[in-house]
Image (cartoon, rainbow, N blue to C red):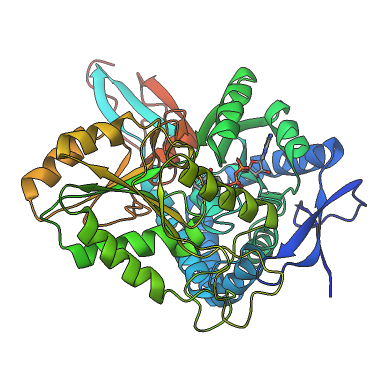
Length: 499
Ligand code: NAD
């Protein structure tokens, strides 16, 4: 049966008829599963108006009441984790356990936001001058918009809205049009948790919806996560329209393997971080930099593990890696393979025509692929491929490897595998990348730290969630106050000396 996904505005499903719609696929079968409404300017205006109307009431809702709604939302998310994971898997393609993992990581941000009464405490300085006190208050900014990518349809939006809403803002989420259903289910859970209508809205669509939000005078803050060219555009456009903006972009994450590393650990890490979620993760390892002479030995262990990976539909109990999100994306990823070989790389593992549990049918499949002897001039090295393609670069020394990683225009995540604490310390100190792992391939910060890369992986100066998220979604007001006399001295307090 074909599904139809529409906007969630002002606490209910949008009742109008969309002028344009997009297709939603089931990547494992290649079947057209349904359609999603694309917002025109009228729907953008309706969603922003609903959020604007809800703002005064939510801003003035007590901190403990806001926290109670968040606690209830947390319970509901936990209770519906499996349902959400299956929904995500059906539209994205990732295996259900991986989808459940992304819901769990989003839940951690909700748990962080449950502590909002503590997080919003300002500072207070008594007697900055005689009988003068100074203090600061963190106030919400108003209507915030979130624009999110296809690869984490639950987790990435949850980097944003739990913190924004906890801080007293209202929110319009524009999720990826490729896998839009999880956002609507989340909106229903918010309503069940008692969030007032209009505080959380979901607007579906493409560039038209995004541009409508970027130019809307009532949108005060924009959070974006997606590819670098769009992140750059969002940053420039939102800032030109006077909004605060954080725009997280693409990635090319390197894993440095030193000769003294535990090679089994490194090979396990390269394979799970390279091919988990079919490489469609912003923190996926896409380049292994093997420092001489460890390359051949590491490659042998990587090949061994890749040969054992089970490819299949996300809901097949034996699957370890699912299909890619669309046929067009699969074809684009696969197009790098011949190009890389023509440019001199060695196709160590060819993932085209993979063996698929239950049969490949018309699904959007590409198996794990390994390119060896990749060099920095090759397109497969320079571009963010965003699929199950692991490139291996051989480096003659630690210095050469470090220079390569720091010179890359992206700076999202990186990892070093070594048993030398001094080398690891030097790496985390010197590398020009925002998130660093030491013998940990995907160093995603916990919710109480903040997530974000450097260079072309982030435009703006605040990272997502954690205290940087609280700062992004609040404005600081500094108050200086002087009270000279006691207004009602009788029965309350004696007047201060000399008054
Ligand atoms: P994308 O940039 O194509 O789309 C992201 C969002 O922008 C979507 O909601 C989409 O509808 C919208 N959009 C697309 N084209 C637009 C345009 N021309 N104008 C305005 N809006 C537009 O990204 P994607 O393919 O959905 O996701 C994959 C990308 O996201 C990868 O590059 C990945 O590295 C990146 N990503 C980064 C992080 C991070 O934390 N840095 C996290 C997850 C994903």
